Length: 251
Image 1 (cartoon, helix red, strand yellow):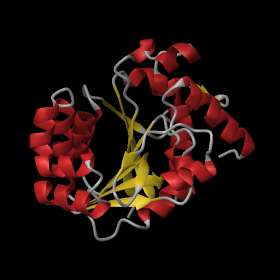
Image 2: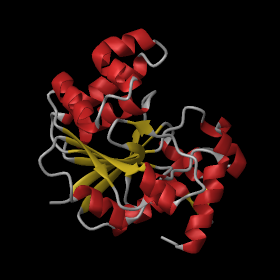
Image 3: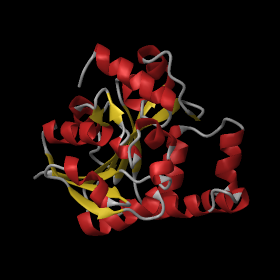
């Protein structure tokens, strides 16, 4: 059985996005990275990865990427990434792999490694430990989530394995809606959990256990062995870095 894939390619700023302007394209997903639109790079990697099936791209204006879709399909993106995932999963179903259009360095072996560690959970998140990122990409500046037992950066790889994972997406939606209301976010996650995080007492098991308590879904963080998996193209410096890395080791 092949695994469906959802690619998040939305950009609320459209042609006004900094990277879209830099590349003189109508949408960030079309930004050339080492001569190829980064969405095209992601789609090419997905086609080359064993076990993957139908690919659906979520974007506000599907017509702008029609020339590079290949066999992929499109769905109109919602106003936020969490809403886009929620709406797409209703159509695609689970299990499903989710990634993003700005993951220009994405490699088949990263996907294979990630999926090999998803058994026994409802939702898995690919991460790269800070020590691994700094080992493999010492010049990059990433945002790290600090827990008492690990510091990690996301790798834009998500596995929604069962219908229970939808409850985690719903939690994500509530947090995103309240991102400018810290008190409401605290009440959603639980004040005790946030206090533990603030004082460096929250570990990865405690975080996953709390999410399971709130959603009923078993969640797992999956550390990947290549720190480059944490590099996405979100700003001009990321573009320079991605092109440098691709020049040294093309996908």
